[in-house]
Each structure stands twice: as structure tokens, then as C-alpha cells.
Length: 158
Image (tube, rainbow, N blue to C red; front, side):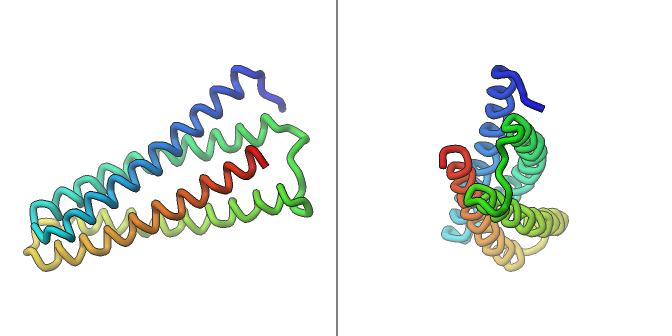
């Protein structure tokens, strides 16, 4: 199935927008948790946790758009998709493998945020420890998403 030119552009726009939300939100959430850790303030830690909760909802919505439009992008290439024996095909395989591992880690991150939000009324020590974990989780999320963007750039432009 080959998509019409306007449809292919719309699919790519959806893909890039979803990636922008995922990457930008991860960096913003990392910055909020980093600020909370550096100040050591409980209110900043609670704000970082609130930002993380919001990001998780946006992330999974954006991810749905990214996956759907990624399949659409591959569909627009039609028969031009190379097998794994080519450099392009190997790059796609590595990207999809990294994406699968990232999704598993993201599910764990989302569960962590959900459980942390459920006990956010606790005293300052657990909140600060939670914020340190959030800082690490969103730093890793940001780096992996940027690596996936790099793979996408290579796939799109060689």
C-alpha cells in the first residue's frame, strides 16, 4: 500500500509531533526532578512528581501516535523497505529492538511513578529518594529517545 503524498506528509507530521512531545516532555520532567534534587525542597519534589504523572499520560498517548505513524511511514515506502541483510534493514532492526527494550523500561517507569504518586503524602525522606530515582529515570528516557531519533534520522536520510 502506497500512501498519497498529502497523506504521507500528514503521517510524518503526526510522527514528528509525537516524537517532539515524548522527547520534550522527558527533558522537561528530567529538569523538574533535577531541580527538586538540587534544592532538596519537598514542594519541588512534589511538583516534579506531578510533572512526571502528567508526562506519563502524554508519553503513552504520543507513543500510540508514534507507533501508528511509524507503521504508516513504513507503509508509504511500500516495497522499498530493505531486508535485514542491508545496512538500512539492519539499522531498522536495531532501532526496533531498542524501541522494544525501551517500551519495557517505560512500562516500569510508569508503574514507579504511579506507585510514588500514591504515597506522595509521605514524609520528606521518601519523597527526596523518589525524586532522585525520577531524575535518573527521565535522564535515561531522554537519552534513549534521542538515540531513537538518531536512528530515525539515519533511516530517513541515510
